[in-house]
Image 1 (cartoon, rainbow, N blue to C red):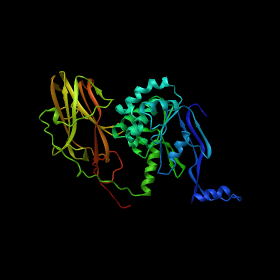
Image 2 (cartoon, rainbow, N blue to C red):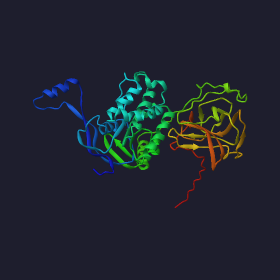
Image 3 (cartoon, rainbow, N blue to C red):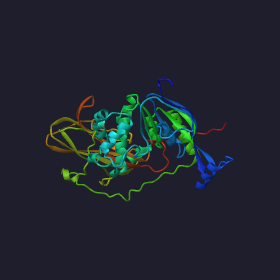
Image 4 (spheres, rainbow, N blue to C red):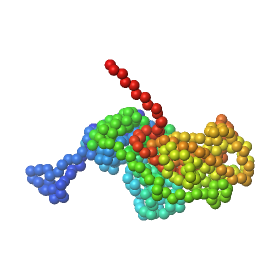
Amino acid sequence: MKCNIAIQAEHVSKVYKLYNKPLDRLKESLSLTRKQYHENYYALNDVSFKIKKGDTVGVIGANGAGKSTLLKILTGVTTPTNGDIFINGKVSALLELGTGFNPEYTGLENIYLNGAMMGLSRKAMSDKVQSIIDFADIGEFIRQPVKSYSSGMFARLAFAVAINVEPDILIVDEALSVGDIFFQNKCFRKFEELKEKNTTVLYVSHDLASIKEMCDKTIWLEKGKLKMYGENLEVCNEYSNNLLKEKSQFHKIYSTDHLESKNYDILSMDKQNYPNIKYTNDSVVTEDVQIISCFITNNKGEIRDIFYAGEKCTLSIIFESNRDIKKCIAGFALATNKGMWIINPNTLIVDGKRSFNVKSGTINKVDFSFSMPKLIGGDYIIEVAIADGIMENYETLAWLYNVLNIKIINEGYHYALLDVDAKVKIYQMQK
């Protein structure tokens, strides 16, 4: 195998024997005529591909296409019936939640256990423990038995271990889907760091948007066979077209009737009146500025976390300053759960395009009024920031990631990230 190849599969097949009833298995084993009582099921059928070092490769396909079987073969959980697999480098895998974890051990003990399973010494793992704990961000639960963890906490710890052992090859199944949108955002930003370090990533997901955004190439499996392997967008688009041909698309309409609305006296400048926010580990925090609250209201002044595309709304940032800020800039970003910014307005580039003066010992409120972008329906995140200076040269005083999680509803048929209000004219002439 060439040194620039990380993974190579040559005519790999995985066959399972299916019996109609348990007795048939016994009959077959005792049969003198070697009569077969089973049917062969090909989870994988003659699959071949090569993945270069440093590539991020997506794996897509319907349920039962063979994705999980392929990953289990690549990680050595199971062996192929036919064909050969070549792996060039140290592999770290995040497949089914709980794989490689002892439920009776604490989170900390499981970190060392997983390191030992990967051939790392206790000293080597000790050097990585703090970064794993920081990334998992599960607080004191790190010292509790993992059997007491929620699925989200389990995912956080498992992923933190998998990516911080500095693998040559990282293999990730849909396990990330159990994490909240904030954790998913952190994971996708970590993927970008791994790509810069030339780590090979194999990522299985039903989320085509994340595959398109993250991956260089994509493997499309269908009924155990390799349907297509090539450039990312080409494969994903062909897969999407295939889905559209097979079935019509139905869009789930979300109702806002169940939401509890609460009106806040937002002009009182009383810190107790504002909904609390959480500071994540990767946020930029200084003693000069504390962002007290961030929320979005509809045109009735009600704080909501679900909005219709095109609905008028106001995003408010409340912050306390412990210093004079001569040229204060306030801004926010609306991003996908992978961290891709969709809009990023701040006080220097919208409306009056100006900074403003902030005095030490004051509480300040900045409102951004806008129409919710006509995005494809789904979950999005909000980041907020306060800075001092000008666009070409500024000092970040506070930058909070993952402050809000909002849902956008866009009724109808939408397949792209963003809608446009296009005008259409049709012309027709006789031949």
